[in-house]
Length: 221
Image 1: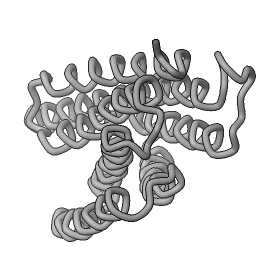
Image 2: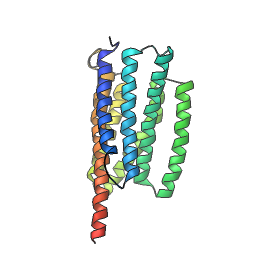
Image 3: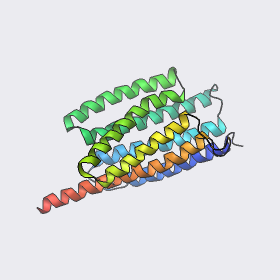
Image 4: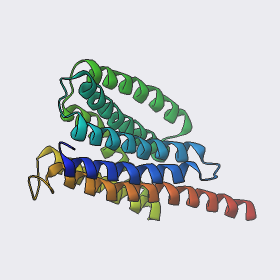
């Protein structure tokens, strides 16, 4: 019997949706491997985090036990991996290749520190928000700059995705729910985040299509 049935089911649904979309991206044949791979990391890490979150809420609600603590801390690490991917995607939009490499080095170091904190020091969900929200904000700004320059469809999808992410984080943080059992803050968070994942997938897919089409046009000229 699941301890928090509605929360666990919504977590598992988000995990399944995200896994399918990450798999579709990874199977895509493209020369834009870094864009494809980092979008896949962002969505795939969401899938793993949601899966582990469902396991934690359903089977190991007591984070004081060894398994409960391990599942929950790994969940937080996966949320951090999503933030890592968000920074990398934003860097592709904002910076030159040399700067992108420096950003990658810096954010990998920050992610390693974050993992050390969530595994050994602080396991509140707030620490995940502190790491992820600035990364999401950077990606939002990157999509906004791109949209203002060219009004590309992938940038519009990205803006919607990140806007829904902020909305979901606010619902989670401020405990906004409609029903204490079936539509509590966790369930609504998962529902909103699921729509956000779909738009993030669309952003990655359309971005690669745009770059591939642009390359063909350049060759034709």
